[in-house]
Amino acid sequence: MDITYPHIIENCIGEKLIFLRVENEPGGDKIIVENYVSPGTGPVMHTHWLQDEALTVKEGRLGYQVLGQPKQYANKGETVIFKKGTPHRFWNDGEDVLHCDGWLKPANTIVFYLSSIYAAQNKSGKAQPERFDAAYLIKRYSAEYDIAEIPGFVKKTIIPITYYIGKLFGKYKHFKNAPEPVRN
Image (cartoon, rainbow, N blue to C red):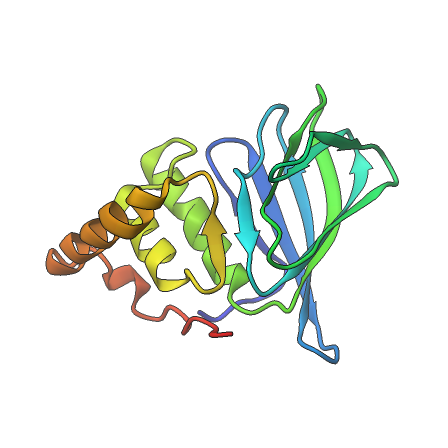
């Protein structure tokens, strides 16, 4: 996937993410981002196995939660950091659009992965991505990302079956240039 920065993605549920640039740093490239989130929306509980993530609130109120911990909140000027391997979620806890600056490090496949997730959400017209695209992305990039809200049985049985049915019916041609997953 050839990417020109800034690279802008939007999904049908009110999230806009702008990948501004990549900064080369020791220990891996850092992707600099800016996001806009509509009230009440945000990503589900998820994990970046190989990346740290930071968000600084520019406008609005950020709700966030680490799995097993109580909900917390950040206001304008406050920064929240999620260390790699930490299941977390965040959402717009205000009445106006939430605007944050942030970064993920190392960048790895995040631009492709999130661009594909947003496209699959737009394809389905809802927060849950189109099922074949979701199965492809979840299976292929499981060493990098996890969606904690998906039950274990679904991850171990339903998603692989859906993936193979999709492969059998040629559903993944649009992923022919997908980057190789990063292995830890």
